[in-house]
Image 1 (cartoon, rainbow, N blue to C red):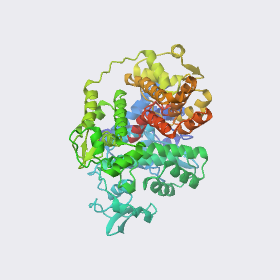
Image 2: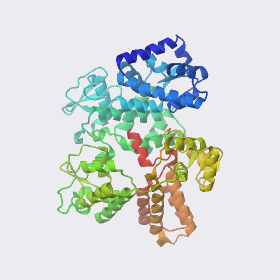
Image 3: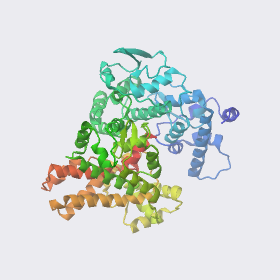
Image 4: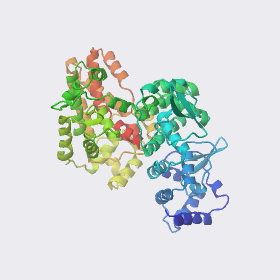
Length: 607
């Protein structure tokens, strides 16, 4: 948007509004969700104010269509305004995301329908619609040239490192709000808003720092601030300054079990056990992406990836030869990690895992080509490469990526030869959406089919289809046959609304049946020697899938199942069962994540 276009938009708003317009736009209560959710919650006067800015008077009377049109206009205009790159607008949006106190909002954000205000405890608070947050993050990029302000640089770096090594960032200057700590002859910047603890110094001697781009630091800031915000939304009457000073070092300084962190937060803010469980779930979701200060700004996966260093490159360069070329400490680490007695068993498991991932499209062509592009190149902490190293499919030698020949052949076969000839019928789409969601509102499914697949069902036609394919109707929702209503109401439905986004399904998602069938077959084969009655085996497999689908722990259930049915199982066999489930669990659709698997949901968190 040019300067003139921006001014014209401001003038258009000024022609319509008067001094009381902002006050009229204040909502009665907080509304979570997307822009569309908020537009639906506006009263008639508020809706007409926004409509007069964006839409002509000669509109059809259908309110839903007006909301769709208005939402699209606001989104388009918001994207254009971001192109103008107004400093005050960006600062206002950043402060809202960070939930700072006493925020000064640029009027155009409120009057343009980009930000919404509501009253809570006699204070004005602000709502930034989820989809507009996504547009903002994708459009406003910070790079090193733009970050001449030391405050912004130091803020981003403090999230990543805690104590920021001065010799790594020689251009930074000491400013108000930050101090310089002298520790063992070296200088470090420190954010004085965070209480300092001398234990932060304990791991400084052994740190190998990762220096990233400032664009990357900025993206990471949004990840961790979302983590803090999601936890904050579960707490009541919390002073923001003390909250951030407490939670930042707790969650970022050093790795702890998420259950410990959740208990610390719950104890401090005296919350119920249900809230503690919700906090634990949030921490679990984000923990793989936290760059711990004790690791020099590296995630747990990046730390693990850096362990896979070859002492030499073997001549045949197979996966097994590479495993054997690791140092003794790393081999012992892997044996403990997989709980196996020899490296050959690990090799077989890893190859089987890669075959499964390729056969079931866990890694798409773009991901795999990126891996091949990094072959024999310096490890740059690329997320895809880190994942591949973490899964033990490749190795490092003198900090360069080494892909074993047998692994490379499997990748090449997939990328250049893998056939994709499955075709979904209309009824298949209906079936899959219910399977992937467990329970889905009739109207929501109708919208998904129309918006994404051009399938314009009436509710009556959809009801008939649901009954024909053996699914069930409960109230205004469709259910998979074995999902009980009480379980859905307690464990599924309340949480589905937390994620506004639904997975859009395609031909590739027929892999659901392959995943379930393969997992069941593996369990059948493994437990065959226990002579479990067939109906109990089916119950076991169904229960595992349901527990994974509602994101509930399944290990306690497994132990209870064998004990209550008086089935003796050796601990080694039990661990092997867990290993099999572990291969497949992250790719089973999670109903509370609206059809996304845990692996896919984790990728959403990176965006």
